[in-house]
Length: 445
Ligand SMILES: [Zn+2]
Image (cartoon, rainbow, N blue to C red; front, side, top):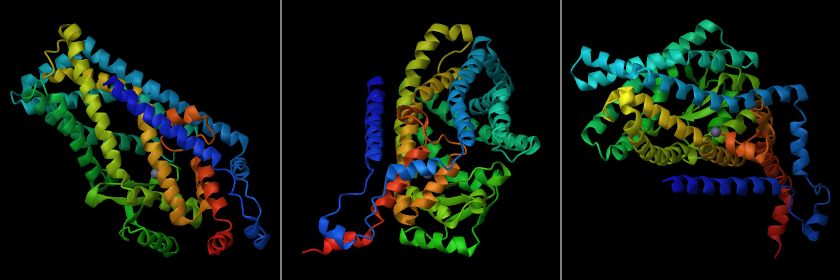
């Protein structure tokens, strides 16, 4: 199993290295035949891709660069702190038998097992949220304000947290109920069917999110401004996308970040852009962004993501099964946990799975980053807005490091860095500067 993880990681690593070197080499425009060159003397200005990329990156003043680098690098540490916080909290719940006590309370209240699972899950989620709250408030509120990325005062932020807690109570308790239903019937092969349940649950959450969850935090409306709407709808039609699928939401309620996304699944799939994007960006920038989002849509990244996620969940559950049995044999009695069919085991399961996802951070990032890069290439071809793309990449650089090292990008970046994306845009531009020359070469006998 570890070999499988390593194989996946190394395949992805090679893919990333290949992509990175392709991006680095994609530099100069191709050599021009003498005939073509003389016929097009006026347009044969070699376009230096690297110089164009450097010129774009140089538009951001050093102090602004230092600030966004610091913000993004702080995020690397947060991956570690979040992981350690989860480990400490879950360990406390086990070691001091709080988990066992929450189970006992649930058992005193009802004899109906699915209801016991729900009661236990509610206690666990509320307690764990309270214990990790200091980190949550630093990460989600104070840090965002410190870097000037948030538009939200504390009251509305807390309201969003309360709604998020309510959503995780409903989703968490239902997932637990389904999983323990499986565990209690299939003690040996539970992890196989448990993984299937988790994958189906994840697909279901993706399906309902745009309709039932996101509207709890933001207001979605159809894009009205025809000057923006018409070119987007035209690009959508050109790429075979149902033309009514463009929504705007008030992301400015929470933050200053520009952005757009594709969400949903099957019938609920939709492309949405933020009001920040609409208000802060030029039409070429919006077109480049929407071209990127359409790339996700056309290349079925939602479904591919679910397949990748499914593989990781499956391996994760095998690891979970092994980890649970090994730990329970050693410490189960100390913790008052009766076995894997006992809900009191959940903090241990969370601990094992958070270790798994922590270690897999580069793999998960590389899966998404690779799809994001594909969407960039699609977006360039669809929108033909290479400079718009480069400008938007600089705006995204307000909260994402623009020019990291290759290893840093491989480990920590779930989207390509500014340099990678602007390089792709300028490479595209270089190849589209001399259309007449291409016709001439092809036109020769
Ligand atoms: Zn994307």
